[in-house]
Image 1 (spheres, helix red, strand yellow):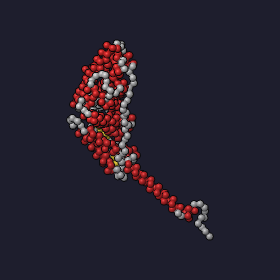
Image 2: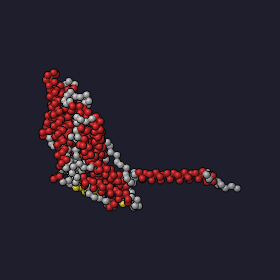
Image 3: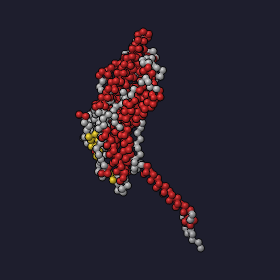
Length: 467
């Protein structure tokens, strides 16, 4: 199971920047047309992705967004500096894909102002990075459990898994940038002040929640990468005791606890819009994904806490934690909410949703079987050798440690504007102008030093008048 949510990508309507922005000296006429073309390219790729069944070309989308963003930042910068005059308020059209809606029909929204356009573009960028990570992970399969894989092949696939972790860390940083920075520009827009329902995409809490979910997914993949060698060894010789190549069970428990905390916090944030009068509710599949992910990581944390206790010969504690983990995994497997990977609003198409749920069930079943094997082993050890009491669930909960992060969000650095203030060409021209000014000043100073008459005239009256 990839452990990564698949986002349904939005689509956008056409818009020409030349209809709304102009400069009196015609300095940026060509650049404005190029910005319009870059946005048209983005619209075409999103439309193509919507009508493509199966695997989508997320890498192409990422590159298209990376070509458009410098142009968008350039227009925002030029408007702010007065280099571009806004003839009228542009209205950008986007479909919301994070909101709860009937019949899987994403509402189309008319969004005035450039800040709203920037928010939706950045969110689409983060969606594309996350979906690209999921696609890369799915292509790897369960390679760590293939008995015929060589160390060289395994390490090569480990690197690809690490690349997916990096993509998710970038997505997390993008979502966080939207929450803390980009959305500040939309607070005073006409649409924000009106009674029109606000989509989840324009809520800071939702963007913050998505950042946490992306980071939890990166953490989950980092845990998998940490265990690839031991997973192979356990395939050859399954069950406890753990192989020498196995990471510390205590460390794995802390990593899963942190991932669970991130998902639980994300779910709480995602439910905030439903409590507001003028905010659209977040799509149910995304809420269920956050809840189920938190429960799964919780169960896996208890599995490894049990394995850690067993390795320290605290067999009673091991039986308690493993029994607790087994019950939670069985509940997830038999009565889970089905929010395993997508589907509906906030997810992908129906096929992608079914794939995510199937992956989820397969992983939970495999984990439940693994936990059952550990539980049988340590129960037998406790019943025949240790005879230790099994603590209650409350006692076990009191001994659960704090979580630990293995990854960090990569902060988003806005690209250099393609033109206008802040662009490379703009800075170069201003630097050249300063150099020319300095040269003229130096020439003037040199001329004065070479002309004693001019120099002395500044020092006393009647200088140069000799009789």
